[in-house]
Image: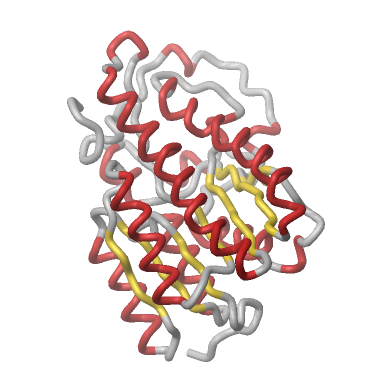
Length: 276
């Protein structure tokens, strides 16, 4: 496979790249010529599949494991990525965990785990990377949030809170870092077909879900990867502090209905959040 040129010479760290959206983003960047360090927590097989594919094509790619519930591990990973790449030009903050739980049943441990991974680890990984970006003269940060930051959904008070925090964090950090030559933006995906949907939701039906999305289909990881590529590139040089919603029109329509009265019907977060 011949490599593209849009990211030729760029050094990219993608967190949470063992599965789903992160995996798709990591693949997109190396195919466009970037050297990529991809982080994974538990999904080693998925991460190594990307590495093997990339190395066969002659790309410079490695995978690094880190548990984002342990802050020292997360920051260590960022330092190792910078050492492998010789610096970092683009940081894609994709790592995160999902949890649905009725509000009255959420425990402090569950709350702390989700905020620890989705906010605390992301915050300090970004801090470690940005120090290097400043020293090298600039860079780009793209944070992955969610349409849960903008619209309510039952049993998602904890998860949605972290995603709203990422939007605010993105806006504030962008203003602070723009004078230092670092652009910060975010992407809020809507429904994207990932492995977790098939594992957690027994009645998951992509075609049925697509019928209630204005675009007519459920998005794929490469749809988000294309947006991340754009925001990280010089084509987006005048876009600062924004959150790009990529959701097939989900947040653009007014869904009058009583779906909010129904339970979610599956349990996200079983492998990551205590007590589920």
